[in-house]
Length: 397
Image 1 (cartoon, helix red, strand yellow):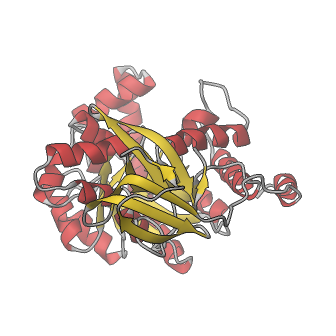
Image 2: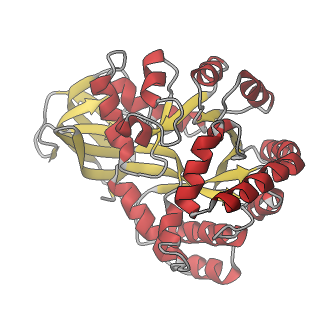
């Protein structure tokens, strides 16, 4: 961490004091792991101390709203939009983290893995040092009590990039890094098996001409030949040595899944085919798909629908990806639109399962002894309203 910023953090008293005063929520639809129970939940010293049917007096009246565990987000690309809100503009990093955090918490997310890029395109608008700057700001925000949610870091490792390992090593001593994904966006495979979809995406986002796109595609494919295999192995070895969880990304084939198994992958992010999702799920990996995919009913890259995987029984975890509010909405939509999935089962996909997939077993469920990370939700039509958020029993939104 930047020495000046660290010194500031160490000499600042946290403003988010976690209280030990017991509190009780009543008249709530408690979304437990296996049922929705109308009743009362008690909190003591930041943990759930009791669950019971019926209402009590002298408690916070939830007015019949749902009470859920705080949502757990494993992969959001949202922070960069606050740090770089316009071309050529870099915002104050701590302010950017606070703005991102506020939107995360007000979406019902109490635990978030902020995805930071490792391995940049040649013409990337942000550098590895920018990623380190954002990570430092996350640490300062957490130490100073600025942040509502509990933040960890997820390194999105573009293994085809020449500077992938160099960027990864900037985070070698960062305890907030708990997850790394092995990504390869080379055209012609994984997310972009369809070159047509690749061309559409990059012409839209980069404004490339046909000639520029041809040169860009050729450079990416040549870069992948140089780097992808060796960097994938190197990141996997570093992650294992650091006791860091690993995720695969955009697996499309059985060969991709076999490789993921060999690397000890915990989470299979955004598999692009039913074949890959099924194989990943059966291999014991938590299959993660985008909540925007559920809300929209399709993938923005033209790959498999998350609802199709849910109906087949191969969807374990949802991630808000690029739209924080989508996570809660997708859970309720899955329960409403998929006969095989109840509301408690859908909620587990955004709480208990992602928490346990990355080793955070003390949170993610309304169970006695678990952390009192809570979200009060009212359904109005198809769009849920977050009416209150608590982290370890402390109200943050």
